[in-house]
Length: 193
Image 1 (cartoon, one colour):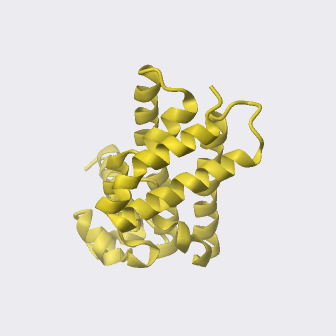
Image 2: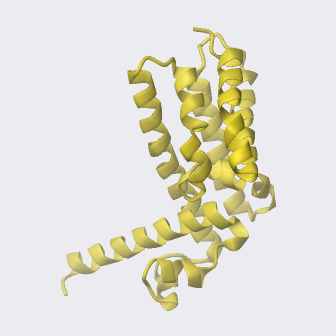
């Protein structure tokens, strides 16, 4: 086997591990991510793990980054579609983030909403990567707000969206039923168009 083929297989295996770990961490939380289970879900042997990551924490940090990239792509597509249909940037963000399908898509959704209450209890490396994801969400919100919006508005809106999503997930159908009113209230409060 040539070097290119070996490298390509390694990259594919690495990608499968990241895919499995990013779903697992959003579905089960940090503590629920086991190396053996992730490797099994990725279709690989447990013994091959250390060829890709130096530790479980290194896997968690990479999984959070991977989950964030995946989540941002999904959210950006929803926002773009809503803006194409005439929604303002704030309305598109709120409606895209608090979409009914986001309630059901925990393992494919926002890692901040999936892991928010657990972030502060992580090791330094995992903590910093997770905090970067929180900052990234707040920045995405800031960019959707009008330029003259008060600086604290981005944090407030991000916190409201994350909290609403967490509560909707916790309450299931009852929580999902509250999302329309929550979306309307947040748009009324933050959208100045």
